Image 1 (cartoon, rainbow, N blue to C red):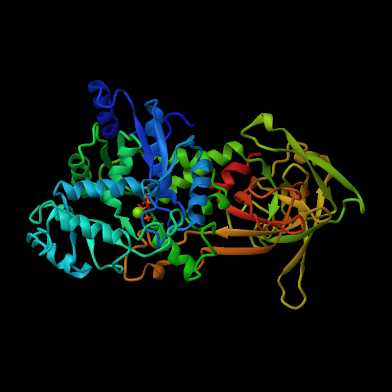
Image 2 (cartoon, helix red, strand yellow):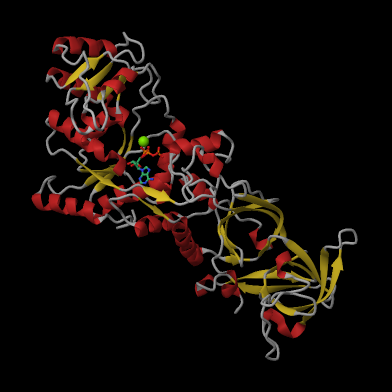
Length: 558
Ligand code: ATP
Ligand code: MG
């Protein structure tokens, strides 16, 4: 487990330090990550995972993975499996502490009976709408339900009959009996149980009443011996009820709920419901579309767990909501990929260049360095022959000032190979477009070395026509055009119609032929790329993870 990663915010650590000093939990720190299995995890969850597991690790404690599977209608086994895989991929380990709130349905039911017996809960026959109407508003107190003062015996009888399935969905609920005039609306007799005749992915048809999250959560924490129950700010108002449940049931050493600010990223949507809508409406190809802020999507795009953890660490923990720039996430991924990725040459929009004075049929290999950032990474052989492809945008017939690449009569370096000079431009007879270049090379510049002190200002990447492999390259841009895509009536109106560009005629070095899905490379001057699972030996497919920030400064001097 990465030590200290996602390091705790001061306000959370302060509480823990105080508990350590007072011996509140006998020196224990035990946290949990409690996802609802109703979708795939996204970058916001990554933050929560780093905080939950990171806080435990930083304090010599433990962190559980617990599925909050209290709503059988929305939850699926597919999501459970993906969540486990994603947490592991991020680099965290729950050991043998994988739990489900549904493991506790029996105990939660017993606790509910106890609350009824103590006069702390009652069965209410109001409909959902009536309950809402009776609840009041921020400025007006609520009204008591006419069923609020049922006897304990009647409540026990009705609740048990709810449990055995005598009533249809929505006919009755069990509610806590707290205070309909409380200034905190969540304390106005919140619902504890609802009737729902649905099959649960783990408990099958054993239950037709299901506990509400707000009731199940504090008790699941208590049952697992959680000490610090870290969650996001939207649960701040629920803390009073969290504490009420534990106090009403006289739980010893009750866990504490601590809230931190949710992560919001610019140009990004982090709501499972809305992400699912993007899939259902066909705006993206699935949960693992590389444009999605899901961990499966980011993984397919080429993001690394190390970079994501570093990002979560850098943004720290706040007590008020704020929005983090997507650029910061990209900065972290670049830093990480820069260290780890071998450099290779790939021509995304090829322009053919024949080197007319290079002997017909001759081939040679150049040793090209793999990573200038890492001298230990060595070099690889790259084949060269009489015809090469260069990037179309590296040639201009009438170059403007400041364009240092190839132009008629101009000499440039082919990275690691030779100096070449453009002698002639061949046009497509029909369209007049540049179809091919005729160039000459200087044999004295072998290996890209400078002959006789003659300097060139441009260094181009290239591939040998006889050796290059075809590839498809998928370029991505922000999925949303607006910084806050949730603005407006329909967030899908903010989608970027150009978020995906597929280039099919690309050519890459032959050494990439066997690259397996998930391998990552820096394509010189283009950015960082990752082999997509769609890739086959015949047709390589790459996703651009992120572009290089400053293409030219990096390559020109080498
Ligand atoms: P969503 O709105 O995407 O459904 P959620 O909060 O309902 O998110 P859960 O599965 O209930 O998703 O979340 C599990 C944990 O992840 C919770 O503790 C929640 O607070 C945390 N979490 C979810 N989104 C974020 C976020 N954007 N930033 C930080 N933590 C988050
Ligand atoms: Mg939720």
